[in-house]
Image (cartoon, rainbow, N blue to C red; front, side, top):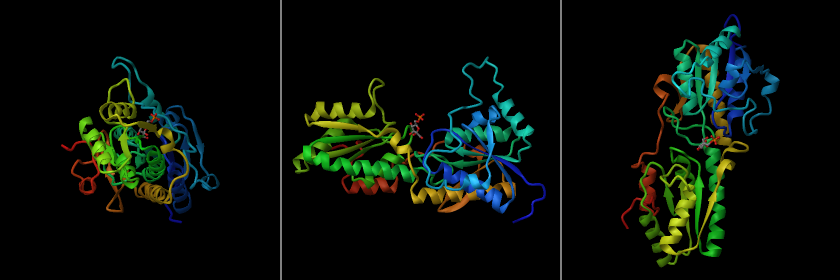
Length: 347
Ligand code: F6P
C-alpha cells in the first residue's frame, strides 16, 4: 500500500437517472481507495441531496463486495440540482450546505457519478473550491468528452433483445412494429440497438425525418415481398406533444399506408438489472482510475475513455455540452448503403 501520510477522506455519490454499472463503479472507486491508498470512503445517499442533507454512510471494504452484478445503485439517486432555483429572486442555500458538509466532514474529494447534468453541478462545485472528480454514466451515451459511458452497453443489449423478439411476431401478423427506445436528446441507443436488431427504419433526434419517406420505405418493402417492417424510434424525435413518439409514428404509418401497425414502448426496462460484462469492466476501470486521480490530486476533472485509453478531461469543458450522433457518422453511412432508412431519404 502506498503511503500518503494522513488518510484521505473521500465521498461518492450517484446522481441523475440510474443505469446498470453504478454499483460496479462505486466498488471500483471504493475498493481501490481503501485497498491501494488507505483512504476512508463515505457514500452520500440520493445524489446531491445526500451532500445537502448530510445523509451519508461509511463504506467499508466488506460493504463493497458482491456489487458487480447488482443493478441500480446502493446509494440511491435523485435529480436534485442544487444550483437550480425556480425564480431568480428565490434564495438558495443548497450550495452553501454542500460546502458546509464537505468542510465539516473534512473531505478531500467527492466523486460524482452521473451524466451531463451531474457533471454541470460537479463543475460548479469544483469552481467553489471543492475537490471533485466526475465519472460518466448513462444509458444514453451522450456525455461530452468521453467515447463511452457505462450503462450504454447493457441498455443496447436489452433493447436489442426486445427488437429481436419483435421480428417473429411482426412476421406472423405481417405488421409494422414500432419500438420506442430511450434517448431524449441523443439517438445512440436507438442507433446501436436498431442496427444490432436489424431495424428497417431508425429515427433519431439528430436526423430530421419525413413521415412520407418512412411510409414509402415500408410500402417498397411490401412490394419487394418483405411482409413486415421494424421501425426503431428514439424518444427524442420530433412529435406532437399530445402523443408519444411511438404512437405518432404508428398512427401516421397506418393512416398513410393502411398497413396494420403496433407499438411497443420499452421504457425503464432499459435502465434496470445487472450490467453486461463490458459495462462491469468499464465501470471498474473508471472507478479505479478515479481513485488514482484522487491520490494524484487531479481534481476538477472527469475520467474519460478516448480510443480505449483512460484519460481525464477538465469538468469545465464538459458541463452543459452533449455528445450527439453526427449525421455523417460512418456507421450511419454504412447502414444506408445496406438499405436501412433513417427517414430522411427522398424515395
Ligand atoms: O437515463 C437517461 C434517460 O433514460 C433518458 O433517456 C430518459 O429520457 C430519462 O433518463 C428519463 O428518466 P427519468 O424519468 O428517471 O427522469
